[in-house]
Image 1 (cartoon, helix red, strand yellow):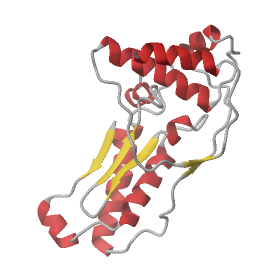
Image 2 (cartoon, rainbow, N blue to C red):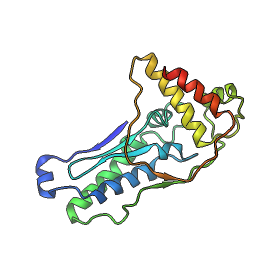
Image 3 (cartoon, rainbow, N blue to C red):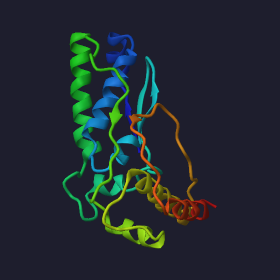
Length: 195
């Protein structure tokens, strides 16, 4: 999922160019608005490009496959519906208007930081993967959640004859999480799904 910011030519001519700090601020906004349980979804948001003509904030489905269900309000969690399409977009548009009106650059221009943590909020679809890897189903850590997302998205893309791709860009800063027993089983499942 990509989030592009494009400005009409006449408005861009008046603004001349985007300052890099604007892209960093928008990226921070996108990370702050994203739902937060383990931190995996927030760390999957990258700043794919940030230059004077284009700001591209990218949400990686390979790292957080469940975000499409949260965005569309499908599944057990409905409270985050349209967190990208409405909430994030409106917040960024508001900040862009303020920037174009005042010509002031944002004050917060650091790389976003996300604290990764174990969570008890395990999605029902994740429990089957946890069981098959002989892991507990009461809690999940962000590394395991990311690996399950990779498996699910690789399977989806394979079934629909879509290319499995990884995207690059600036990534958020995070704390280090220990790997969990059983993640090697999930990694094998991912490699099988990917091939």
